[in-house]
Image (tube, rainbow, N blue to C red; front, top):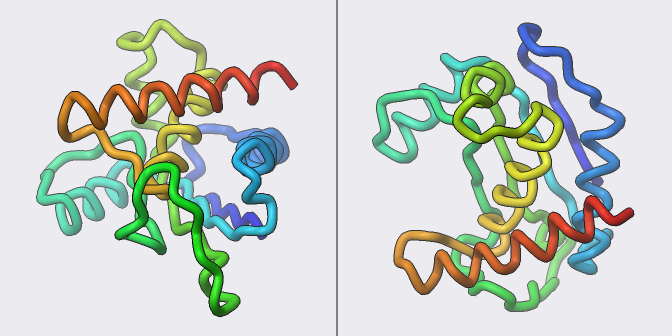
Length: 151
């Protein structure tokens, strides 16, 4: 199940496309039967989460909260109980994303696709703290973006 909660009003969001994009990403990953929660927040809310959970006292574009925090990149999720089908939660701040667009030279929809792929990769154990992990994550993101945009 894909749960999308839009808690902001500043930026219009095509929720149908957002859900469709998530479905395509999960299908590509062969995780269509898994659950994910997406929260669209204002800048202050994501700022609070970023401060409280990442010790970064500023807003950001996306935060990922994996249900399986010890999952290794590319590893299969072992489902022992129904709750194990939960991938986790993503919090996105549409106003921050919109304000940050000049830095990326993308339109809002394209940047949102990139962030969804990025966030879902984090839910699946990918990270970019060290260069070698960054290269692995970047490769996975590129493949997912290609599959998302080819459909």
